Image 1 (cartoon, helix red, strand yellow):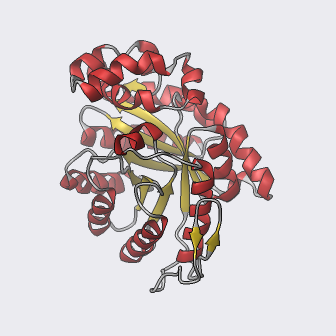
Image 2 (cartoon, helix red, strand yellow; image 1 turned 180 degrees about the vertical axis):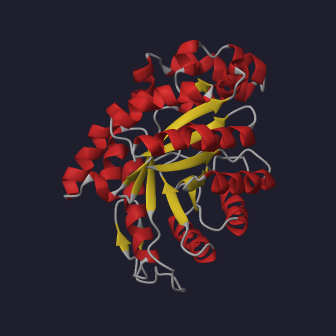
Length: 334
């Protein structure tokens, strides 16, 4: 089993250093940080984390080729991988269209753009010329890294839609499918398997992280409130595929989106998050988490990725996961 932690990029940089050290000590294998718009810079955060850790792998979840040019993504990936001695994992996808609209940007050809970006970055970090004549990328013969990348940096695709999930199986080294709710694993796996079959690969050829949201605390109400804040911020941007699994629609999230993003009233937004919306993740004690995750492991998950908000007290949540949840699944798979 592989275990990872995922964080949004909304905390002070020094906090990530503390959490990464705690994650490494608790036995986590990977540490991921998002790069959502108008929050703190994931490349800076990950560089600080790389300097403060020794063995844990670090990753971006996710960068997108719209707000950051594909060539610059490759430069960053190769440079940070060099600095951390081959511990960097590049999380890549198209980004959330709702957030890109804040910049007046259109998400044209999202799947094609990401697939071509994967091909270009693979060539660049493998030391090859990345001349491209695609639908999204048209690069000349001068498109190559002017320094030697330590290795071809592994690329993990973030995905929620069926077509992007299929590309995890077709072109990526790993996948970061968001499972809202965790039981959604059964819904995403067939799409990924189609991509694997398309390219003659096996599931064992990729690191497929079952990405959940959780909020762990002995204080159940505090755990639920903390998860509700995260659902209020991101719920409106979730794909129809995920919302259908929950029996919800974007219209259900519209009053919450307005309260959170337009009016800045976090308390009002949290109060509108319903119990059905809280099913997007898992909130409660360690035992509650284990109970829901048993089904995920029974479906074949071999990498569990614990995502934000983690808990009302993040350091306590990391330690609880390390003491109670990780050993449970490591022993059950021994």
